[in-house]
Length: 589
Image 1 (tube, rainbow, N blue to C red):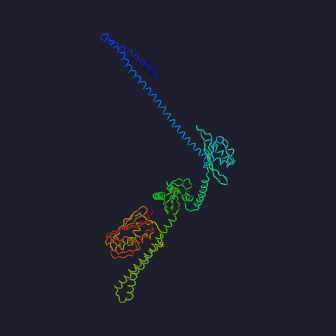
Image 2 (image 1 turned 60 degrees about the horizontal axis):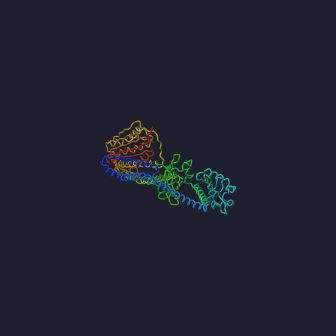
Image 3 (image 1 turned 135 degrees about the vertical axis):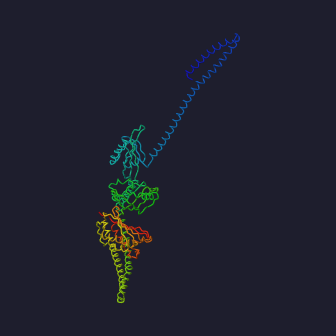
């Protein structure tokens, strides 16, 4: 307890005693009637005061002492805790020092790497056995502490040592690799210069380390040779080569690939997404194949893509790709060889077209001879039969019989003539020997001319031909072919129309073409026969509403001539309700 607390208790005790005497005396005199009783009670007053004062002093002491004792205990506890922490820190420091000592001893005894600790003047402070051995072999000097390393180094090493030592002194770590010949063995050593710091984090010297790198350098040289061979092989191959990582970015691209993609700088390709040089429609297929290569270790061969060069042009490329795996067997990238096969694709397409054309020509030839053999034979037999009857029995025949036979002969000859003309025209178109001389033709006038030519046939069946064509519509076509197309379709319309009916002819401009349509309301075509109309393989023909016969080649000729103009021919038909045939030809001026 402090001096201040002691004084406080004495003062309080004195005041309490005085107050006790005065108050008790006052009250006793007031309430006690006799002096004898007063004296008796006063004899206990002192004892009572002692008891009360003792209790009072106890309470005061408890208050003051408890507070001070608590403060002392807290102070002592803090001191103990601090001492405990310091002991633990000292223990950790001791453990670290021991660990550093072990590591330092291991480093000093190590043969794996050499190290020398130098001061700012390149004097030796510390070195290990490996450094002592190799420096002795190189310099011929047994190194010791405080010896200047720069002074004992061979002349060919001093300049490099000084340059890199000064870098390290200025807090710039340096590294250099040098080859030595020690005891007839070629060694590569990787020298490392690092600044050495004291506790104040100030540079006081340099840690000069040497690590043998002979095996690594041998591997690097072998790898370099392999890379050189690989690069020569890549240069020799006519195919483009690229290496792409699993993220789809190019890691390598060969000179042939740069030329093929028309990339003027390799830096514009490396580390760029390979998808950049593929047509947009190939993205999904490309990503699918990359997934197969990287995630499933698949090789892809003969993959064909449409690619885009840097100048915006496109070409077709064929790819062969294989995954490149790391030492754990996991694909990290893939190598691809690719070539431009645009000409090959075009040649294959031309060959396919030529093949189809050849097949078609062979089929047409076969059908041609079939038609000649079959369709010409019947009218020819009729012609020969009836002419033979006339020749053998002319004197015995009546005038009416002669006239009837001559009529049969005429019809046979007429059919033969029509069939022969159609076959000749069709063969000329197929062999490319027909003249094609397009010019501007007024549709209204040309249609009117052809209607006039066919009016006798229409008049015979009392069929009215109506036109709905504007007078200023022109086409750019060969006049003979146009007339042949229109006459064939219009003749069929008359042939399959019922008597006393009509035919409608119309024309309309459709972008760069003019569409002509001929509608009849006659016999129509059965559904099962619609596919036979434009094929020479089937040679489909039917008789008209009055048993008119045809050659079966008219519509085939029409299609060939419309195709020659770059147009198309179509039809719609409903059996016994009529048909509408339409064809387009280039619009004229």
